[in-house]
Image (cartoon, rainbow, N blue to C red; front, side, top):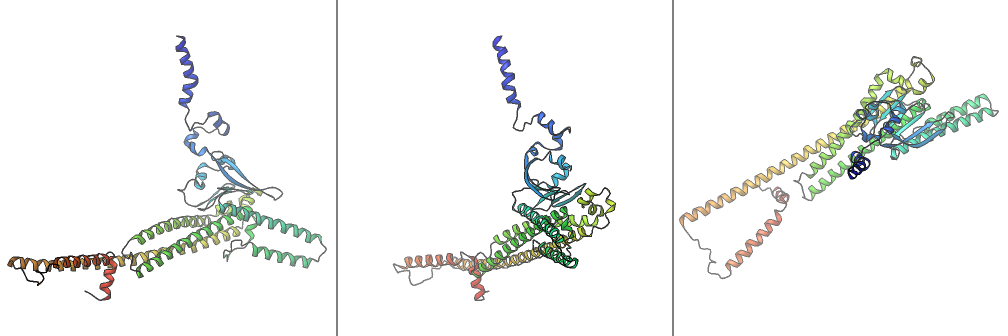
Length: 425
């Protein structure tokens, strides 16, 4: 009886906890510290409770930049930034099934371009994947822009302190503003409609930099695809000149892979373009994107002019339209070359069929002659039947010509070129 009680005791203290605890076990006390929502597992899966590294860039009250990397839980992030779970899933970089999107919510702008995913507020920026080179470049550009603005303010203060005439001071300020306008186009993007006034607002500066970097990345991907197509076409032309692999469909398979990648890129770019158009058509979204204004003013109706944001979005819309036009031109080029390749394959296939028919007719006539001679039972004299070396010589001759035939017909293109060269029909 004593032994049985000891067994029960050890079973309760050791065996049961090990058996019931799984790899995905999360203590209830840990969850209760961070949430009061019931049935949280139905709202957000357990695998997404892992901490993710995010880049936070914040503007302090004295207009200084604080940049740091923060480990944040995906479950806590919506409560920190006050955004819905569904919106967070749309811009999460770990979900590859979602297209680029721009979401305008209360006091926040959420952006996913396909290369950069970020959450913009009136005084801070949250970026996914901080180790991404494109994200690092965006942060550096924002820092450089704010340093220029800060240095410009210091210079303006020193100029006012000095005892210059009013006209001279105004001329110097205008020259500095013109210099700022020249330097602000940091990506060398042709921008015919840009006014530079939107760069004074933090949220528009972040939006502009992320959009321009992403569009530049789309442009680089298009150039890479175009370069691959040129290489394939040049390689095929060399192979045709060398009469090698003219009938293979390897090039068509490679072109299909490139075309699939191009289609994916086209879908992403088209989704980004449609989101920009959607925001331009919605005046409420346009007004809600002025996060700094809404933070300083209670009523959104006080905002009457939002032309700066409209010009910024129209500029990026124009750039996406140009890239989409380039994608369509590349798709037409691929389609045209695929048709030429199929025509070439069909032409050579028909020639091969014609050659096969000619050989079949030749063997048919030879077999008819042999049938006729066999019917008569004649043994025609060839005047070498009495020679002791005749069989040996004929065997060597047949073997030699068989090897030559195998060598020349190893690549059917050589035989077809031979018939074309001498116009053998």
